[in-house]
Image 1 (tube, rainbow, N blue to C red):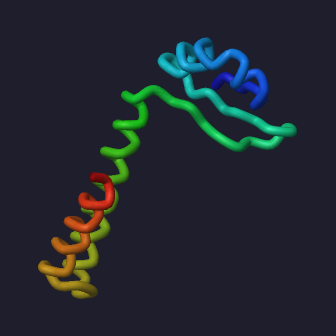
Image 2: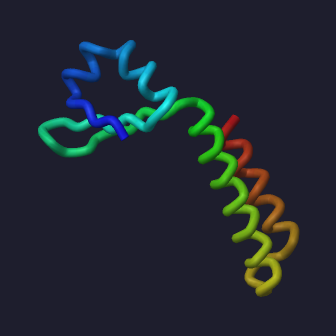
Length: 84
């Protein structure tokens, strides 16, 4: 993981974007982490993993009787609309 200060990230924005294609870039301000820059491929992988997790949680809630199948489907549908 590459770590850059906020000023350095601003001044070397192109280099930061290039670096993010091969590794995660952590941006710090006054020595504290404030942001992460990652490739679109990595971002999409995280989104897919998060979607899978929500689907598993919804299914588990159905199986445990905590929500109905319709409630679970409606919840997952609402998450998809938030992304659009």
